[in-house]
Amino acid sequence: MSTRSAPGPSTTHRVLVVEDDPTVAEVVTGYLSRAGYEVEHAADGLAALESAMALRPRLVVLDLMLPGLDGLEVCRRLRSGDGPPVPVVMLTARGEEADRILGLEFGADDYMTKPFSPRELVLRVTSVLRRAEAPPPAASSAVLRAGDLVVDPAARRVERDGRELALTGREFDLLVFLLRHAGRVFSREELLRHVWGWEFGDTSTVTVHVRRLREKVEDDPAAPKLISTVWSAGYRFDPPAAPTGNGGLQP
Image 1 (cartoon, rainbow, N blue to C red):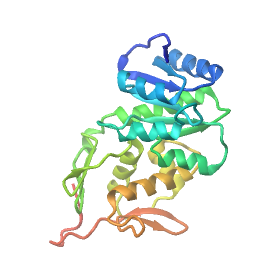
Image 2 (cartoon, one colour):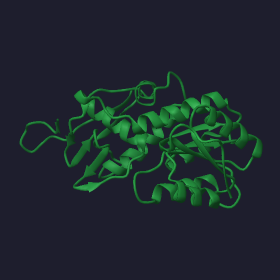
Image 3 (tube, rainbow, N blue to C red):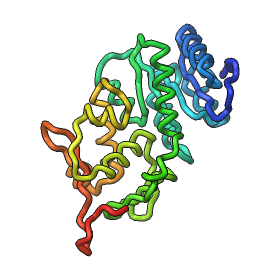
Image 4 (cartoon, helix red, strand yellow):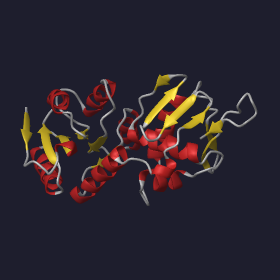
């Protein structure tokens, strides 16, 4: 079953809230509605998938613990559908790091642990949507190439060996940032600040996104050659050397 809150100013900013706790659902939908979003609510996993298919929300706020299908399975199915992946902000009452990492590994763009500030949730939703929808600056829209990897920032499209890759919004932003700063090492804290826009936060978020990105762009994710780990320092993008000797990364 799905219920609707008061519509916001634009259907392009429809948010689906998937939460089985009526009190939490009421608070979250209320705050998002007042922030200008059109908000839909689903109380279980199956209803969430039906609503997502019918309504095509711009973002899903998804509780991890749900009756029927749990949030991880809902997230996995949302990611396996056709078209660009819908951004997901996951909510969880679990405090263990392993559960937060699981959510990120299943494709969540962000997460918040209960109890949380509704105002902060609105800010997180806005941040995720802004990054997913904002066009890149004109001066930085040139296509980037590294070996068989081709990244089009303007179209937010990535191809590897001619095959389009399905990246989440954060994975795409992380890849573009590393490509544009190839050869430079960034700590996890620096990546949180530059890619996520967070001045503080759980750096395991970066670790999980790097691992997921490697699974999509590396020949062997267990022995990465593009996204290198610099121990005690952070991560570095190493473009492959071009056969012509002109360098692997080209604008």
